[in-house]
Structures are given as structure tokens and as C-alpha cells.
Image 1 (cartoon, rainbow, N blue to C red):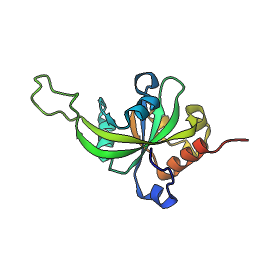
Image 2: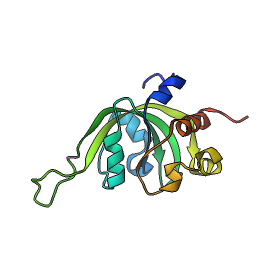
Image 3: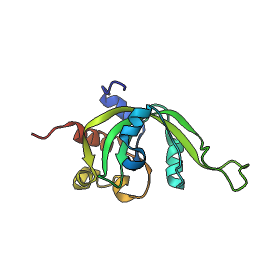
Length: 157
């Protein structure tokens, strides 16, 4: 995995995202084992637009949904949007509007940042994860991103 020594200015110069995945279907441990993932199967137009907006080097929070919902890791975009081969029109001949991106893991958070913690933090009240809970790919502001990372790397004594 890559060195997690990001600087404050780096956080501010990139776009930040959160992607959701069910840990039993494709969890962080699957992602680590695979080493690189094609993020496919997204069939929501807003989530698709977010995939299209991702740029190489953008940072992505990896969120386990459904079972023990929490941000568990950090990834990076390594390939920008291209057509999703898992989608086709009814004839299988026309291009579809659906896209994928490719991601690589950067680091596992020292401790997961639970949905309960996120909801309890007033500075995260406008996070799309709370406001649009069914969206699977969403932007995250730099200050929200930094706070979530801090929550995941600070051990309370």
C-alpha cells in the first residue's frame, strides 16, 4: 500500500469522495486482496455523474454500508471514468450512459469511523452520507474529509 503521509495542501488540491459497499459483497478486505478495483455496477444518475467527475489522484473514503456502517479505509482514483462493460442496452449494441472508475487502496483507518460518530459530529451535518443516504458515490468537502480521517486515526484515551 502507499505511504499515507499526505499534506494539508494536498487535501485541499484534490477532489474527495466517499464510496459505499456492502462488506459481505465487496468489503475492504476484498479490496486489499484484489489491490485494484473497477468500480462498476453503479446505476444511479447522480452517482454516475460523481464517477464522471473523479480525477486520477482524487482521494476516496471507503465506507461499509448495511452491516456495521463505517468509513474503514482510504483509496485513490487510478483511472478516470470509462464505459461500464457490465451495462448494455436491451440489444447489447448501443453504448450505455453507465461508467466505471478504477481505485487502489491507500490505507486502512486505524479505527473505523461509524455512521453514529458521523451523525453525532456537528461539522459533518451536511455530509451527503447523511443528507442523501441512498447515494453510493458522493463528493466530500475537504474539511469533512480531513475530519473523518482525523476521527479514524486518533485513539481516544
